[in-house]
Image (cartoon, rainbow, N blue to C red):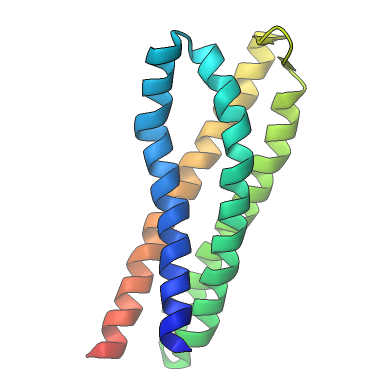
Length: 154
């Protein structure tokens, strides 16, 4: 059961973190270039982020399961830090879902345009900052996960 749990945790973390990283680093710039517009690419991203948030939610459940099942109580600081990171990732995901709904209110899907652009871009900037913080927390969680697994095997 332990190896199945660890595999599922690692797999969903990789899907979430890797998908997130690949989408931001490759798909968005490529889509913008191919479609000829950051605005049109934004309408693609608007749809993709719903899927990314579901993947995040599943990854968070598996990450918490791994932390509570495997992080030894004797390494209390590491365990508390790991729990804190996962909860922060979850809270940030919920904030992103909330802001996503706000951003949708500025979008004219029929005409593929944005209403009240200045306000939209303020919210969008916040969305991007929260996403970046969530991504950075993912790096920290991965480091703690590997550190814990290495500690158990030594």
